[in-house]
Length: 343
Image (cartoon, rainbow, N blue to C red; front, side, top):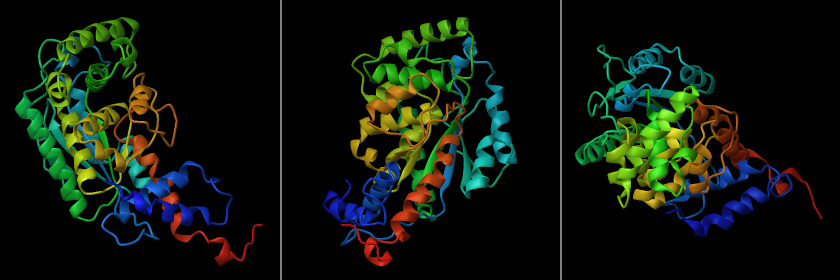
């Protein structure tokens, strides 16, 4: 729980900068949230926000429902993209390089594993891929618990190594189906509202995708969040859920990326509501159901660039804004310091 008794002192520092109150808009709220998070276990509100070693973690996992032809690409592409991440050739690599963000890639359970070791590859597989969620539970309850714990411990380890700003991305053919099913099962939205075109599928594929997800969601009545994860989740999604829980438990700000990452964030808040306090929302993606997840989380994203790539790209694009929020909080002169008087 964030130390709300420091809120007034933090707002006083923000409002006393050489600007009209509220003139920096959302950046002021970002600075306030960061300062509140970093004031936990302090005797006073922090006057300096520290951002150390920002780290993006891309969780990769494959989905059995992809065999139904509801994506433009086969599951083998997941491995190919993981290799691309490790070679430094993907969009997420470009954005991480441009913004001095470290990158780690996690094999949570992809169909074709990467055989060679790599310093940025973390292997914690829950299987080759989930079962087809349109036909049966995607995974067992045991795999859900194991996945949450693996994600939790990984993120805690990265934080213990010195990162105090983390962000999660994902890769997995078929994972918009899983995220759509989670949204429909855990909210009052219809399946058709929650399902989008993912990688850019045809009208016929969209109709099939909607029909298959509806079958899965029908099994999720009166189930807990973890039980719904077992029915329609993904190996990468359950590990992201654990990562969001770890961020909350360690009071570490975490940037939430697009549709799939936000679905995992939403599930994490249903398991432990207090983890919502450390979440910063990067952007609203072009995927249909993302706006409903943001509404459910009462989140105001920083960007709207019509992104729909995943990989954590939107989260990394938000890093400069978060750095600027910390910079003005730390170093922008106060009226008194600048000798500016306002009647």
